[in-house]
Length: 436
Image: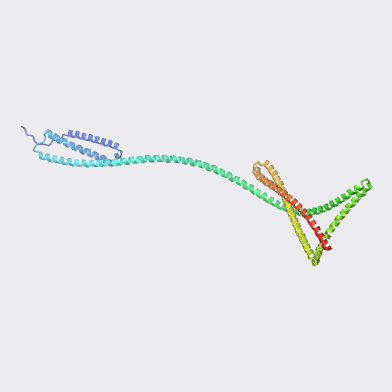
């Protein structure tokens, strides 16, 4: 029976070379798995420390498996000898310690791998959040771009509107400048018209003075005509009576004609004498008033009843004189109002004539420049309407004043008749008193 010497199993170099090839193949597999994992988890694709730790872990596991396989083969083949068990146990202890150390290291590396995986998950979540945020930002940017394009379009529209408004503003300014020039021209024309009106007023005042003088002359002539009419009426009555008495004789007619001519001459002479008598009458009235005062004193001495009656008559005479003065003042006032209305009417007629002249000139201008004349026509038409309404109003006032004047003249004639009657009664009573 042959004794077997204990010896270590020597691995041949070919087998070691094959194992090295196996280790390289396993390393390549491990690297491929790591690369695939990195591709699936893109957060760890660019971490070289993690890749190096994975490869180191894989190589250590592979070495441990190789050592365990060698131990198992050595046990099965019975190649271990009893004499070399001490060294073998030492080697086994070394391998075991080394394997424990490697297992601990593997555990640590696994923990690190788990930690890295958790970090990779957090990074992945952060990356997802960032991608979502990036997509939201892109959408927001698109929305902002759309709003910016809309605002640019609106700005272009507003710019066109602003340009149009500027053009309209320039047109309005030019129109206002034209209007201001027209207003300035109208102001100048108004100044010239005012100066002409002042001149016309002065002329009217002069003409009014002349009219007053002529009216006084006309009143005198009317009085003379009234006296002449009375004389002619009396002469006509006489002539009719003479014609009735001597209607068959031509000689009587000739004599009557001669008498009529003489009477006319006498009427003129009487008229002149009447003027002289009026002046004398005024002086005699003054003397009469003085005499009446003296007689009143004498009568008061003689008879108190007659004096009281005389005082009553004098009071009535004074009252009637006051009424006559009031009536004359009223007549003068109405005449002044009538003159004023006539002057206003004449002035308005002149203004109407002037406006008609201006309208004719503007019509002529309209044929030359229709735009400007069309702008001036409404103002002139309005002035014409105002003047026509004022003229109608003045005419109505003039008619009313004429009616008032006629009524005042009628009342004045009535008062004159009453005054003449009272004077006659007064003179009659005075004569009676003087006879007493």
